[in-house]
Image (tube, rainbow, N blue to C red; front, side, top):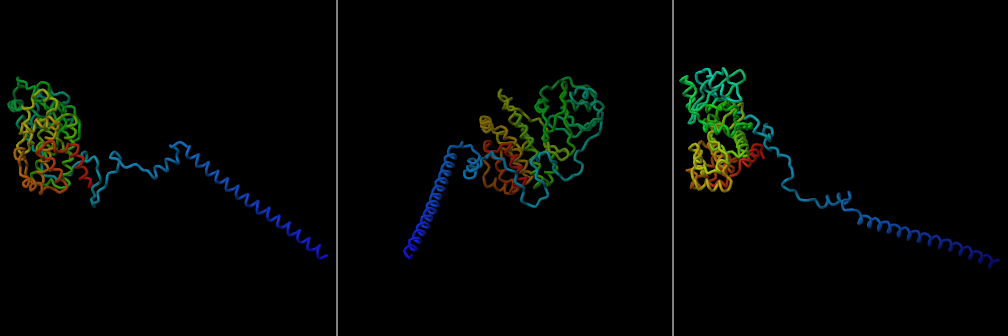
Length: 396
């Protein structure tokens, strides 16, 4: 009995042990199979990524995250806003916004009114001045300027001295024509820019031209009274530089930038008096020496008075730097009350120049120093001047 019981217990134990062994083997086998399957899946995934095209979205996202290219100069950046507490808005196109010049009394003085003779009004192309009432504003070396009012508006009429004498004497039109006297006006006739005084009409018979009227006169009163400072000066210089940039882009040089030739119309500064304007192309025929000296004493660039500097600028294609120098002198005069003619600039001691520049606004000192450089090739272009002035105006 006891032996049979022990035998049965042994059989049960062997059966249970067999079952456990089978379970353990099954679990181990399942784990091995799962590991093999997972490894195979990882291997297939790795192979599939390696075989995918390199422009795949995942690759691009990973590449841009870890291999960003460096910024280049052509990358667009938003203009930096000024950090100072000014209420002035950021203006990128500052040359189209009026300059808030203080009122200095009557801006334009006019003489005794008179009716414009028919022999003048009927000869001008593009502008109807019949029955216009005119008055004399002033005369210069070439001719006189009149303010003429019609039902269509107010215009500025510029006539040669010969025509002006005929108007005063009530004589018929002069018999001697002056076909070259209006050449300067023809250079800019048809050009349109906010900072250029537009030529509206030119007579084909007598030396007379019609310009748009600048109701605030020239910039001279504001500079002479020392009120053109700080932001007003920077904004005014932007207007002038914008007009110069446009002229230079059309292959023209003004050649006589000074306060008297900068006119103000409703707060917009405009370059006027084109008696010194010339084209870069006209000098290819060898007529340069006859035009080089056309400038106003105190504002002449060094290459306008020294032929070797003029030749150097011409050979390098830097002839338009004449206007840049004169604009620099205008800014210098507004800040210090002194001008710097080309005669004095050449060979000027460095300490004396630095003493003059030390009286200029620190925001403009470096730029003005470059603009009035003795060497035309060392001066910035009108486009660069405009960009740097605008950056200063914006507070950058």
